[in-house]
Amino acid sequence: MKFTHLNEDGAAYMVDVTAKNPTVRQASAVCRVDCSPEVMQALRDGTVPKGDVLAVARVAGISAAKRVPELLPLAHTIGVHGCAVDLSLEDDHVAIRATVRTADRTGVEMEALTSVTVAALAIVDMVKGVDRSARIREAKIVAKSGGRSGDWVRPEDPQA
Image 1 (cartoon, rainbow, N blue to C red):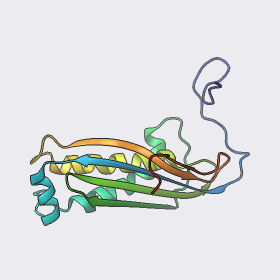
Image 2 (tube, rainbow, N blue to C red):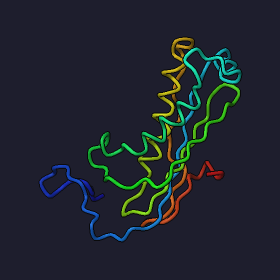
Image 3 (cartoon, helix red, strand yellow):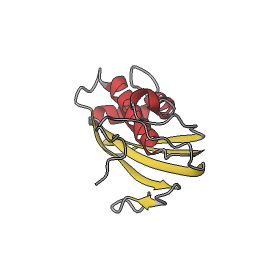
């Protein structure tokens, strides 16, 4: 296996994508936050003391997608041209899905994954006062399209 982000001396470097042509790319990621039954009911009723948890999580996820190069040192600064963060209240957890789009030289998988994980962190932050057991689980990329490697869908998630 050839390491793409190491030079001949073994030092990390950012891959030069200057010569690549911009193409439309999209990636989706999912994550979940498990919460107590009481918190799930408070989320449904809109009575979490800190406010509108889902609205804050959505905005946190969108903001996070645009800040990936500040967090991941080898990530390229790219234009995030679209980011949708969808949250749904399931029986025992909040399901989070982010889809990020661009027309650029490199993919947006890390932007989608960062989006769902920061949205999850925002949820935990807002409910931790009433549910210290809330936990983040199963953050993963479920689909990507565009670029040299083409389209991919996680096999166990055909709904991606």
